[in-house]
Image (cartoon, rainbow, N blue to C red):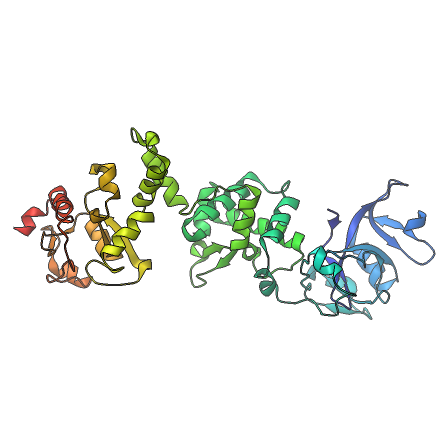
Length: 416
């Protein structure tokens, strides 16, 4: 890929954005931005080669020079070549803010924001009868949401030599996280960064790599090329970022990640179970079922919810997002069959689940809620839990598991 300089661009009347690039001339061995003027053409061995972008800006904007430039973001690049202002339907230009002082007094129109140039497939471009007359969008976010897995895959491939191991680790961690949602603090921890700022800079740079290849300007934060911000009211450290799905697909296609339906939780469960004697000898389907059961997912969760009509076993809440699959007989004390037995589970809203899991509350054989002595009913009342709370129903197969839970946590005394 040519070394484009995005600090200066020529804007054609059809919305094409053309950037000067460092060129190598085989005949003379010269390299740099190729500047030419009438009668001194680059193709004839003439022209002026320079690595000074400020010289390029001044001579193109004020002195009538053309510069070798490329269109980025389009498969059809018929306009690429030596281009100057006032010719070839190019009458506007863009310069980065740090170079605005160079172009004061120009007779040509300067745009204050780099226009967005969408990538288009070669097949789509070849079907056109001529150049598009539609101007490029000026809203980067509206263009980001249109990106495809192919866009991301090509952007990652083009920059693979620049992407550090830490950046790849951050991508893999983000992909594997539950719901592909992490805060920047969590991302920093995954790659063992010394500070939050360092992690943010690295991830932003990764987003910038993608942006430069695709040809889209800054949306305010380069991270938005990688993920969508979902909690703007949080502090910078705790902002939640959800990886964009086309990026996740591109990572899978490139083989940079190992597809996993439950991410970190499943990996942690697999590591825990893998340390148990005999786990590796179990059939693969059983191992997967155990991993899912350990994190309250899969067939175990589905069968358990069917027993309870998809509702909390106590409150009747039907929001699946807040229901946790709680094992009554603890995981460490259960056999493989008991771990997968849907009657060893209760779907509970988060507050009840935490109390039940810690053994602060339990349930009698008739479903009545029981508690340990140190927990006062007044305290439970603050959580909306009253002495009348009970399981909505109890099956005979639930009773041995409820009994084990009470015995394990000393709840039998409270029952008496």
